[in-house]
Image (cartoon, rainbow, N blue to C red; front, side, top):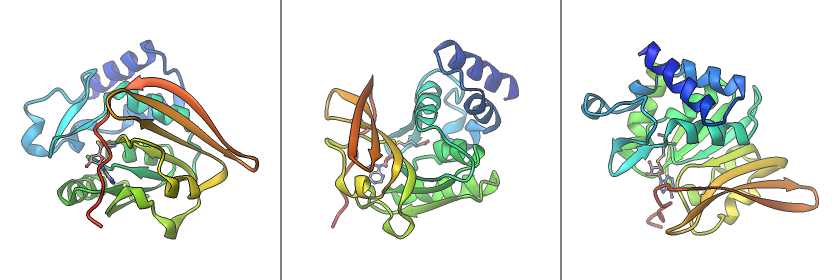
Length: 208
Ligand code: SAH
């Protein structure tokens, strides 16, 4: 798997993410182990495409994981909120970069799988909560950065509130056509920077 991971990293670099720390982290995380066992044999975990993880969900294409990670400029010790834990892979990449990660997943079975995969790979700095990401995780706010890996129709207000001054959020926004948005919070207010067009699963509404 090491050779496939190196090829994946070379591919990401060719597509334009050249940040050495991000590339190194993606070279370290064993992506195939985040794909649930019964699906693993049927997909190429290191291919340049999203990978199914069950429950109609996917891990993003490696390039998109690298790109979003680079855009939030992760430093060791940063406290990061992720919405949409899915397999746990993106959270593992953030942990590999030294971040403390708080990740929320709405599908209980996926949250359980991600917790198990993260624990067996030794990513103790990731906490996974089963719940609705629209509410964020106020007990651990404010966050230095927030990364959302499912697409809401508009930027959820609770997440804006839970971002630190000087912090940055990246998320896909829209129904149908979606666009990544980088949101910077400053003492003067928010600055929205539109970025790549993308395709993510929708951010669904919780029961309550
Ligand atoms: N980051 C993941 C991929 C996430 S796929 C990884 O690295 O594997 C998007 C995930 O968002 C799915 O698992 C989906 O169940 C979850 N999701 C959708 N709506 C949500 C919500 N309101 N709150 C939390 N998670 C949500």
